Every structure is written in C-alpha cells, then in structure tokens.
Image (cartoon, rainbow, N blue to C red):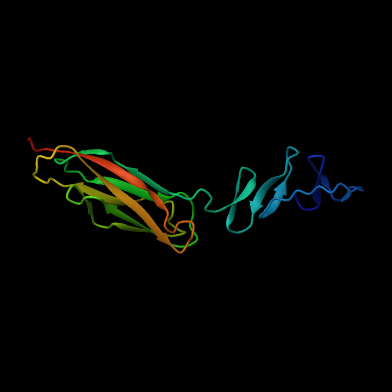
Length: 178
C-alpha cells in the first residue's frame, strides 16, 4: 500500500483508521519502494535501484537475461554473393559490459567478415549489433554441408558471464557437381 496505508481484508486502509495496526497484515513486497492496492491485492509500483516491476512484484533488472540472436536465413549456397547478417542484442540491461564472441565451426564453409566480438554496455544493451558471415566456395563437390556459429559471452556481470546464446546452424548448398 502507499505510505500511510496498510492492508486490511485484502484492501488498503488508511493508517489513520482507529483500529490501525490491529489487523497484523502488511503490504510488503521484497525490494519495492512503493506499493498500491487498487483491487484489494498488494502490487508494487516502484522498486529499489537494480529492480523493475514485473507482474506487480519487483524482479532484478536482468530477470530472464539472454542473448538475442536473429539472422537473415539458415540455408545458403556457395554461390551466394550476399553476406549472412547475424544481429545480436541483450534481453535485459547488464550491470557491466558484456563481450559477445562469435566463432564459426568451419571457416572453410562459413567465415566471419570483420568483427567477431561485440561489446554491449548498460547504455547500448538493446541496440542490435551485426556480424556478417560469408559462405565460402570451396571448389569441392561435397554436397550440402552444415556449419554453425557459437555465441559466447564474458562479462563482469555474473548473470551474463559465460552465458551461451545458442548455436546457430546453417546449411551450405554446394555449387559444384559430383
């Protein structure tokens, strides 16, 4: 409940009521700095620094933290001139910088172009950054090959340190005939 109120029979009651404090029920939500009872249930409306309101309670700012990955496709031909764009961001604000490293499982099939390390800060965590990958023409009639990229993070934020997004799999179709 707001300051100067308390919960009585699932509703907020002003502390100035003569039986104030006799009911023994409090509207306490961990890490909340402000609470209300609009429909008779206790709800957080503001939280301590480092927390945010989620479903009427206070959750840590990186509740549900994950590395978000989107790419322009999973099946590519050796003849493809366009690079594969892999966009990466974070789902929640980190407490410290997060370095995301992207590594190909087989650079003879799928090779990163340019940067392979992305740096996310508490200021840019939700702005997607792009890594470009190039399908390599190996001039070998080896049929459709698979390659993947591994996405791993390091950070002073323990929630993001060592957090693996997932492996992104790509099918590389051959342009040579057997």
